[in-house]
Amino acid sequence: MTLKVFPSIQEVLERIEAEMPINPFLLTTDKEMYEWVNYGDNDGLRIMPSIRSSFFSQFLFRGQTARYIPCLPTLHRPIAKFIKDEIDIPLELQYHSLIYQIKCKELEHSIESHPFVKHSRKMGLHVSKKAIAQHYGIPTDLLDLTEDPKVAAFFATCTQNSENEWIPVQKGIGVIYRLNRLALFRIPGESNKLELIGQQALPRPGEQKAWGLQINPQSDFEKLPINIFLFNQNKKLSLEILKLFDNGKKLFPNDIAFNLAQEILKSRFISRTIATEVFLSQGYNSRDIESKLDQYYKIFLEQFDTEIVHKESIMLNAIQIREAQEYLNLDKVKLRFMAGIRLVRDIKK
Image (tube, rainbow, N blue to C red; front, side, top):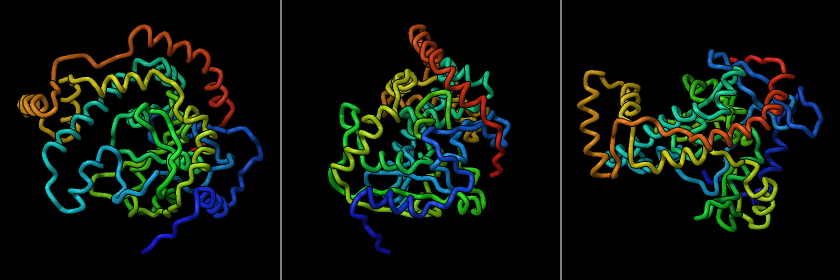
């Protein structure tokens, strides 16, 4: 089926707004509203945009500067072609994916030393560690989604250059996806893969009003209950959206967690303890772990110049912790305000 290509992102946003269901709980205010939410998983409460906020609906959105088929998370993209063509996945790509999974798990351990995370634990706030890894640059099996179509529009019209600066896309065809949450929940097993992330200890997921959808490498986001809005890129409109988010700074505020994630990504050393944890989570027999680690030690070293060694997880140093603590002292009031004046709302998946 041939999809319509809208003249620009402006027409897409207008169409999405026109089709947004009426929110009977809406309060007219220029302030973003948040509330505690009990997700029913006994793993802390979430802080998410209120059902009274202007962009609350049954829909979630995703923006991309171009359409890719299949639509997969970062971790699975290198193997997408092989799965689509029913070709055996090269072992090198399988090993590379495994290294990223181990590095993701290391960041999950390392982030516990961050003052924001410790403060969140005291508040009873859920810490979505895999989502944090995803938002700070480590490939995972999560696909980023947002409640706010304007946030999706940013990712559909802006890209990063070689200096990691956000710049407007000038030409090509971008895409906005709209996922129907209610329809997704009617598909057996799919609702368990969708995670409400909301406001986190670290700022990026909250600013992006984030949700995460776990997708396996044999799947395709486009096969779920979604609408696809293609549009012609326009430099002027892309620049307006870029400025709306302060050249990306509103969605990507400075945080030392990014530096920590980059240090883990660039390290040529992998913790043997964390690798063991990942292998056990994948169903390996504990009696076979040592031989499996020895096998992968040789493969990782020869093919990726990466060593499995006895080492502690990379942690924030004293200077980084002090810097983060200073930011936390400034941000505590905001966190208490958001968490303290809203009633708990239960969500049943």
